[in-house]
Length: 433
Image (cartoon, rainbow, N blue to C red; front, side):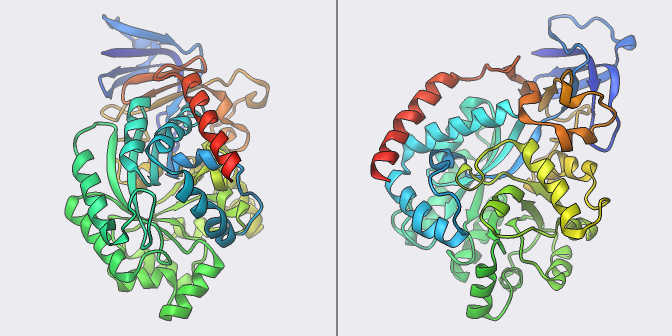
């Protein structure tokens, strides 16, 4: 199946300037060609979308999310990380996380992400087969990590079987679906023993999938690791031989200069979640320093329970501004660097190939931005997207060559059915919570 986008302002990647009066052709899952409208030859048997000058750009990559936690949006606000997690979220998950809630609440997350321009997400939760099924049915590209902890979890009540459960998940989803890439998600060094972390990383390497873990998120985590093991959280993982090019580290707020130098030699990537870290009072990750050391960086929203939204444009704008405030340097972390981290940089950090650029041979993950609005006029540069753009500006979205949203209407699944199902599920949370 071919789709032809005509009369577009084409942003092939975030390092380039937009090219007006352009076209783009997709064939199956991939981008087949781009060029000037003046050079466009007739394309037979093609679905044509007239962009009427709108901006065509790569879809956004949400590098870290707990999709099913849309169920807990607003459930426990204005709390520090440790109290939020141990006193509210873990108990709520123990009571309410099950295959049905994960499936429907992941669909809700997919709706929010598609409507705000995200075409690829890294999810990390439990009942991960249900999450993978939901994301696949909604038409989203996803790296789905199955959670590992050393205590009874909703989908793995016996923690002795935590690695075994993930291995079964990998066997089920590996190379069976063009949209879904399974992964291993060891929650954190304070919920996973050194032995569990080693075994989880060994499983990921053996199966050829990505390894993810939360790391150095809060001051207390840093103090816990130093108190128990005499080292920083990052150095702890380094001593376990976990840090390499197949490892993605989430948050990375509490890092010393020594940590950053050590990380730079490992090939590991980082996903920063600026709004979640701010809301939980965790701090600001040293992203400019990481980038200066050529460490791969992506951006994530984290889950709705700690953010509380999944609009990646909000994360982009927040990240760009935060580092100017932190450094008191208006040139710190320019908009183009942040936009790159939300597209091709994020895809690289997740180990996803041929995503994040609108170039021949890349996956057809595309969003259309309506710039015909007051807050994006005049549109001198894509930098404006970082400082004034929002998810509501996304007019259409294509993932893997399939149009999943057009004219602000989701096409790949029934949004109203999903909203109704989640509202019904949420009634049980209100009554029991």
